[in-house]
Length: 113
Image (cartoon, rainbow, N blue to C red; front, side, top):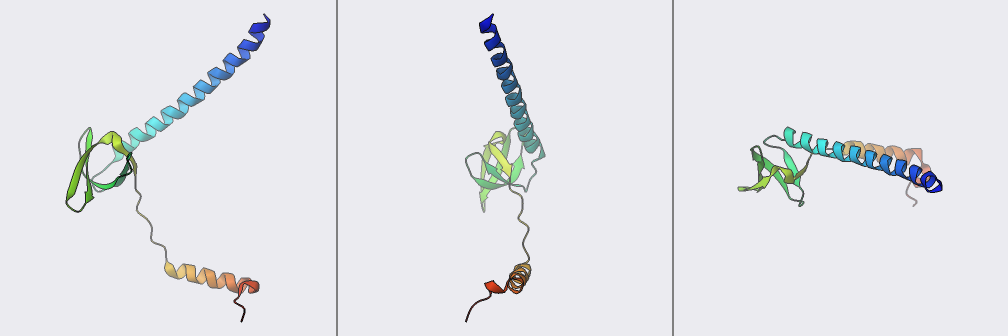
């Protein structure tokens, strides 16, 4: 009976751990499936080996990636790790204004002569 008192809570903790671990794995797998279904020609992607390329063709199981101008390689779709989102260019004038505003607000940061 004494062994059962120790074993039962341990069994419950182990079961809860396995439940949450499997949920996390299912979520990650669904995110990968959603990514692969949403790929389009022209998307920039990373592969699992770290290669970056632009998709030039897609079939059910493969993608054609242009890795340099005129160099197209064929990869398994499962090798695509994630999509590279285009960067939004920052307004260079905005940074200059913020720096100037910071200097005016904090006189101790003004250059000393």
